[in-house]
Length: 196
Image 1 (tube, rainbow, N blue to C red):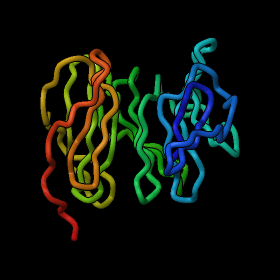
Image 2 (image 1 turned 90 degrees about the vertical axis):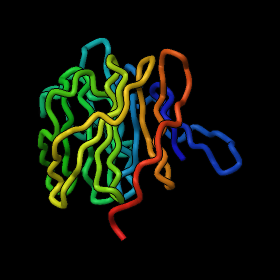
Image 3 (image 1 turned 135 degrees about the horizontal axis):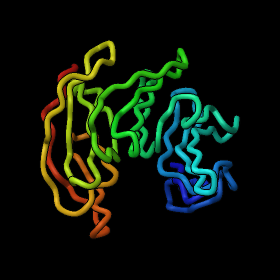
């Protein structure tokens, strides 16, 4: 497992031993999220606070694209990469979710009007996209069809604090980070997978 720690990626082995995997990642401002592409490259969201420049980078290739100039993402915060190589990006400052297709290099707005969207994940087993709204502290979801088109959003639950990251375990339990109280909430059990 590789964890982001400001501008450094740390590898954590099965025994809990940490070693620096990649140091002094370009971009500055620290990493807000990192995930691996199916081909093994690491993709991360970075913010350069001095120039207010947001970038996606790979550990081996440097800057993949400049989010602010190339795709006009105001402030990418969370990212999730699904098995098809689609990168789901929460644009915190742009109040929307965008999808980047690593196969074609194209972007599409997936969901608009998501005020202060933060954590995000695509549950491919249940064909659902989940995200948190930071200021409202809510967990939302929407169906995703086979072509990656997102349907009408529905609020899953209203929370306390400030909802930051979100993830789902293999049993269908959703977990949300509450930044205000420095805790992880085990929220709900999502329905059984729709795919067999």
